[in-house]
Every structure is written in C-alpha cells, then in structure tokens.
Length: 192
Image (tube, rainbow, N blue to C red; front, side):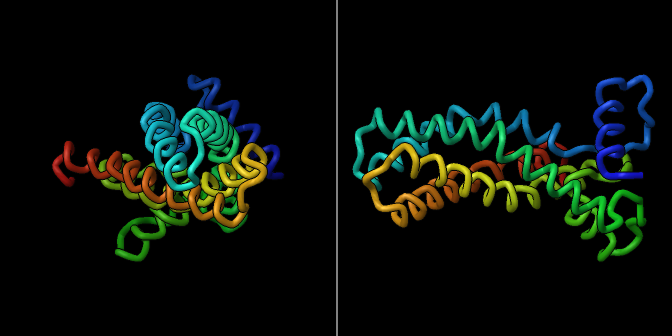
C-alpha cells in the first residue's frame, strides 16, 4: 500500500473513530499540539522579551516578529515535522508493534516509534511522556529553523547570523520549559 493511501486511511480513521481499530496506537501530534497551543502565549511573552533585549529592538517589533514566527512554527513547522517523522517511521518498519520486553525495545518504542506510538495501552503512562520528551528534539529544530527564517524576513537590516543565534537561544529557553509538561505528567501519575 502506498504511503499516500496509508496517510489517507490514518486521517479517515481519526475523522471516523467508530470505524477505527482500537489498536491503532497514538498519533503523538494530537497530544502535543494542545500543549503547544496552550503554551503559545507564555512562549511568545518569554521569547519577545528575550529577542527584544538580545537583538536590541523595540518591544513592539519583537512582539510582532515572535508572534508571527511562532504561529507559523506551530501551525506549519511542527505538523510538517511530525508528518516527516511518521513518513520515516513508516518507511523503516516502525508501524508494527515489535514488543517492549527488553530495555532496547522500550527505547525503540518511544524514540523510533515516537511520532505514532504503538498500542501498548498498559504502558502509555510512561511511554507518552517519554515519547513527548523525545519529540521535543525534532520539534525544537523545526521551530528554530522556521522562526529563524520568518524572523530574518521580518527583521531585515539585522545580521542573519545574530538573528539565527538569538532565535535558537530563545527556543532553547522555551523548549526547556515545554519539557516540564511530560515531566509533570510523570509526577502526577506517580512515576508509573
């Protein structure tokens, strides 16, 4: 079956849950996006102040740039990155359950299969936050590159290299804070 057909079936299964199989696994984008959207305003506030001070630009200019770049990053960069990761997972055989009976297989289940977790429902209490933490790495790079690209377009006249560095640093700061979500999930579930 072609990848396009698989992706179409996946999206139809999500739209028509009555027809979906119970063992379809967890598409992590649908758990991550609410966190990103909920965190968007604090992220914009933190990055606005950091970018304004570090690039020595007006607060309003920073707010406009950071808001636009974060909206594009959240609406386009993160979902496209997730789709790319699902594509790689599909191409490399990661759409089948390979078991989690060893430490190596558990690591594989929350890294290689992090974009679309397999249906190990009894293990989701640790797998979902672990996969969430792992996915922050590619999502960080997607955010950094997307936001740098947009910021360079909006802040012409400033050094591209300096913009790239400061946007990276702002994202390191906010992604560090985003990592508290999966950790909090573990804490509130008693590290099970």
